[in-house]
Structure formats: structure tokens, C-alpha cells
Amino acid sequence: MFRLIAEPLTEVDWKPYGWLQRADTDPADGTDRLHFEWDDVHANLIHHRRDEVPATSEGLVCEMLFRHLTHTQALLVLNCACVVVVAEPSTEFSSPDDAERLRAFLLQPHDALVLSRGTWHWGPFPVSEPRVDMYNVQGLRYADDNDEMNLVAIGAATEVITLESA
Image (cartoon, rainbow, N blue to C red; front, side, top):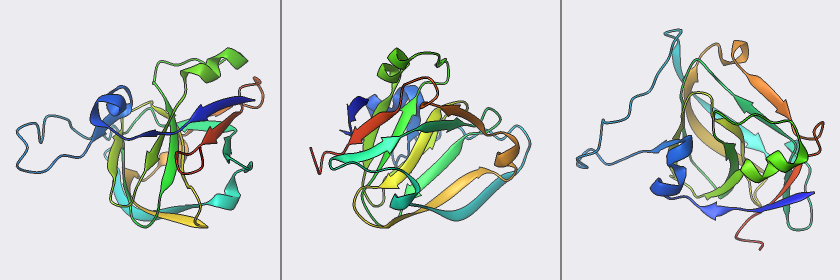
């Protein structure tokens, strides 16, 4: 199984996947825009549980990725450390070697990020707590635009090692 160490979240490292929120006093605030092709922007609270995904002694196992082609998605982590795995929108998965195109980021409470349209993603899933809670902005009909990539089927399942356990 491919192993991936979660990295700290930085604006530069996140750029291929979307953008990080900025303070309203930052001159770059407002340069990036949310996009909702179906004009169905929706805000709600969501969560992911640790027991939704397989775990190892050193982390969690990413077995599948999802993406939304019609809208961006904004997330604000509310309560605990968590990990997200991403791949660039142009990534095509067909072999175990494609796991090398994945990146993992360790998120902390109050981290906010936007996923660009088409960015492959998994999670965020909590590092050690039973559940991560998040404020979520995405298309209301996301289930109608929810491509799935089964990494197990192509031999690219990936163990995600968090910095807290590495």
C-alpha cells in the first residue's frame, strides 16, 4: 500500500487544489471566487466520523476520492484535527502509480479552505477524535455531481500518516 504523510496546510501548497480563506484586510481578498454552475449554493453543517474509513496503527486508509465538476466547495473545520487527501482536477487514475499524485494535508480547528471545481478529495476525516464537524458551502445537488474514484480497484489505496502519529 502506498504511504503518504500529511503535510501542514499552507497557501502555496494548497494552490493546485483551491485556495485558503483570507482576512478581509488582505489585498488579495476577493481575487478568488466561488462558482456554482447550477445556481444552487447551499450552506450547512456536515461531519465525518473516523470509523467511516479503515484505520491502521499509524493513520487512516484512503480508498476512494470524490469530485464535483459544477461547483466549488468551502469547508471550515470546527472542532478537531483532521486530514484531507486531494489530487488536481486534471488527474486521471488508472494504475497504482497514480497514488503518487495524491497529497495529504493536516487541518486544525478553524482552518478554512476552498476546493476548486473538479479537485479530487477524500475527507476531511478526524485524526484521533471520533468525529470532525465542519461548516460546508457547496451545491445543494452535490449528489448529482459527485464523481467517485475507487482507488482500491486500481491498486492505489493509500495509508495516510498524520504528523501527530508520524
